[in-house]
Image (cartoon, rainbow, N blue to C red; front, side, top):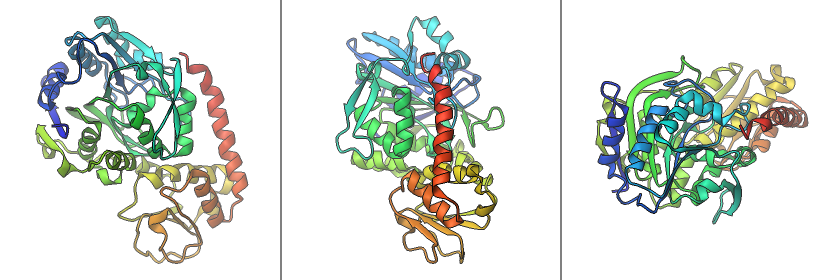
Length: 411
């Protein structure tokens, strides 16, 4: 039953009816929420964005979920998140995000507390069998909750292909810890985080999704759906499939499933409700948009190429160019995954263990995935750029973003 995922359609704008039906079809809350339960409803409120933009969880969906939870008469209910803390983007005010998405108004109507998890007390928690974070700081609200319901929006992502129920849990980390998760390797850090603070239920706001770089309104995609289930891994598989993304390419999804003895694949999920093929669309991933901004570089992706390598490649390419080596990047070929030989010579950088046997590489770094700094240095080497200059440019740019973002963490 934990592999059952429900997909329901929003008819005549009745979001609450669709949420109720999705939760019912997925098995309900009976085995999850009791009168003793302390419940955290965790939407995606990463930045202030308009309602129905597809970039953040909409207030209507959060309200519908909260109503269902309140009907169980739990000991407590909190709606909480912490906005983006500043890595690729500047940091944002969590309260402004709550206001823009309609979540503040929903919480007021229901008398449910809203909490900024960036400003919450936090505690370091050890991670058994850690991939990259052997200890992670987590908001006390999340640690003190008996049930966490992850309520993400259906969204493509630049670094991880998708941003769904598991990635949504990043919001329970305070600002500095969010930044650390990027520095150490985002996909694996998500797995470490969810190993110690796992959502007990997942409900995706797929009323409106967001593709590409999440620019509103150009990247918004009308879907009119709700997706729900008791296991975030399987729910995220269905979310990925609805966006036309192969779950096997989403590294954090594959690692999380392997850790728990599951398969993150469509044929491992029992889908109930609406047929997937009737609603499946092809979302442009953020990485595809990012790649189009580097016409001077040829990126060759083999079948095994996943979000692990593309995640780090985003930073590496960006900062080589930002450091003033744009002209030297012309003619650069970057290979990730088990790609077939395309005959490129000269500036050929091969990245990650899957590309280890690619011929005629002028620079190579192993790992699964390679560390960001190692990837920066290999690309610089292939281009004839000074890697120390690139690294200094990257560190300076991030410090500027972090310094400007810190004042927003408590707001």
